[in-house]
Image (cartoon, rainbow, N blue to C red; front, side):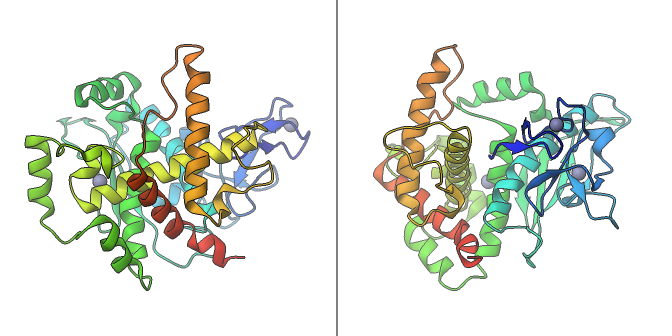
Length: 326
Ligand SMILES: [Zn+2]
Ligand SMILES: [Zn+2]
Ligand SMILES: [Zn+2]
């Protein structure tokens, strides 16, 4: 993520800021990738804290427009959970827009989001997180930090965040869009295997018996070993994490002997495997920093030669549009 500037006083702004310390109300304009004061703010600004701007003839920003179903707002706790999920979605979308996905000049399909809470006026609902034919369902229970940590520990995962969920589910959607490109599917199958094999049976097997021994040799997580579709989504989420870690590290002006220089744009990297290697080294360095104050590792994973190749493959295909844009 980049560090932005207030258009009024030039102070540094975080991506989530709606106001500058100078008092100016600011909004993020996804078209110019800058903060603005002279544009229409998204209609979800007051209710959900959305800080994006929208076109003069529209009421919702490009991110909020992708949400077609919201939780039951008669339950007071659901609005703040929805707001947190929308903030994570904006963070994920802005990285994808750097690659050209869902930007103003991308004529392709957008994912549609159903943001559902388990608590409804008519009782507790079952909500399964997932992607199907362009529709992404997000379970807002995971926007509650203590609930998400409870699930993470129950599942024995080292890392579980809303941003991670969005990256994983949107990756499934991007897979469908990439299948329209010449050469993608055959290259995918050569590296990840046959994604047409029985998905339901593969998931049932995973939940019954866990990952096969030695899953670490070829998969970023145990779940990635369940099926080629999940391998793609897990690997793509990690590739997005690593690109964002590098982008944020350089935007903050930090340096490291084996990291690229300050003018390097992680979203336009021409050598994806070199970017992955640099990002992994930055991740380890930041793990040391986090441990200084007892925070969990920022990137608590070890990657094999095989997973680094897969990460490079994903980055190559995700970033192909940004290179075409010149
Ligand atoms: Zn300012
Ligand atoms: Zn919005
Ligand atoms: Zn999945």
